[in-house]
Amino acid sequence: MTQGGARRRGAALEASLLEAAWEELAAVGYARLTMEGVAARARTGKQVLYRRWPNRAELVVAALRHNTGSIVDRIPDTGTLRGDVLTLLRRMARRQHDVSPDVVHGLLAEVPEMNPEFFTVMREAMTAVLRHAADRGELTLAALPARVVTLPADLLRNEIFFAREPIGEDTLLEIVDDVFLPLVRATAGGTPDQ
Image (cartoon, rainbow, N blue to C red; front, side, top):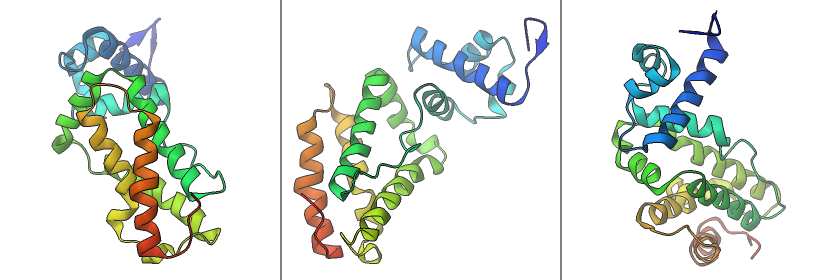
């Protein structure tokens, strides 16, 4: 609980715990990562971890965001719906490069144990992107069904789950140009840029 003689609290303690989780993840991989191992690395008790994160999946997501930033920290505004959605998907695909495949697959396998809030992040980001597009006159946001809003992220998540190789630009372009934009045009009117 002490580091250099000083008791860690608040944000300093949380940052220390997340750094320890990130280091433990790099050292042992997702499959062998335990709350006990992270606590030992952080020189604290596992109950300190459980007060903040109810399971290892949520701890790893928090450590990932702490070390690489959240995908949605900066909502893109490239001037076109196509550009904005591609930017978000590229961030998601780049995340696959930031962690090993065992982490991605491990997290996806533990989806039922995760806080549903984990899945609202991309919905909020896509809603913001679509709001920008509506403000530019590219579409009518109210006309889009909720499933269409998250479709690009859902399709990419599926690709990541089954991929053995990093996701290429061609896959992102197919998701946006061949599936998402035609669906948006058909359901929300407007003319999203190609």
